Image (tube, rainbow, N blue to C red):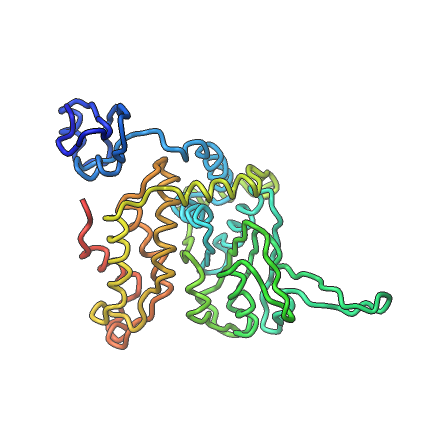
Length: 369
């Protein structure tokens, strides 16, 4: 059977009618393609309610990504969804904010990720008396040479862990604005490029507010995703206890990937297909947050749309696809959008959260088919 919308010189698809009927709307269609032109698998999927199984270019990296996944699961028990969201952000070259109570493994997860990548890793323990120069670096006068010598700070790293970032003053927090958005820093009138890749993983404690400074909207908007780990279930918590009787699982994590290969994977992720209908769906979700009727006084920015699309590309790669589906977008709408939004007075008085309102937007927005 040939698809009815195929024209001359387009790709022909051969498949059994029974397979189409069985899989319509279920997400997978087993099809054999005979290439004679240029029809995309996504168009086939849109017409017949599923996603064609074809060999994506990104499968070359799936084994490496799977090894990273496995090592992270050995350190953080029972948090597969959280690990996947972190990998989504890494593949999309986005920064991550881990927001949760003390002791659930925020810093451990960030360190485990850093150990799987053979890259320059730095950690900053933020405190209220830190200065911007403690992050960026500073110039020191050398009496022997009679010149100033610049000593780079910890921001000059591939993976930067900012522990308890909300303990730093707004002045110090602002030192990361240029670095996170432009991958460069300006110090004493001189611009310094940061190494590639550059990833910031920050943690904050949402419970203890004494001695903390809320992150400004400009800072929050630079994080591609924000999510929590939560407590483990009883079985996984017991497994964690037994894992740590003798030693720390972090001691056994070895590098899986280098900076060069990680950059290659990130470039491959950028090449993942996002059909126009899926682009419009993502834009509608973001635009809906700007409507006061949906409960927000500040909606998501255009940067949020970019992050949502790129993280959706990362999710597609994690699931072995070279195209983005609407489910990739809707699944990540909460982690990507929620932290950028400000509730209006009516929503605050009603006691609803930004997560609830984003979920309601996703529910009522028409999904492309």
